[in-house]
Image (cartoon, rainbow, N blue to C red; front, side, top):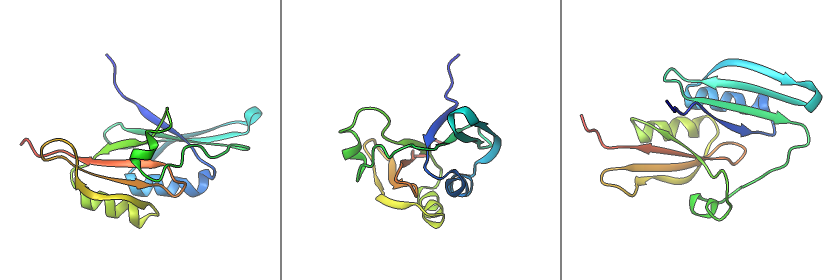
Length: 137
């Protein structure tokens, strides 16, 4: 069996980013840890459905990909964005804006019949896609 567990995001300020991810994505602190010899602090967050985000802070880290939008992100190979499936695109988009996200691409139609999506950036500029699939009921 193969199942997706979590995405890891390197951040400059763990304490500042923790409320954004907890409040904006309904994640709860599962555990925290430190690796003192590497000057790393980290938290592991998970939602009720099992989706996890690991936030990692390391002294001396530097900014990576800071694409202006999801199309430009593809110009740099490697991690470009995380995508979260939502039931209500507008509500999820607004919730993230309320906790400090910035709109990159407003909610609208995506490739695929009835699919809608939006892109935002977290307070440190990491791209987050929200996607809503049509109800197959």
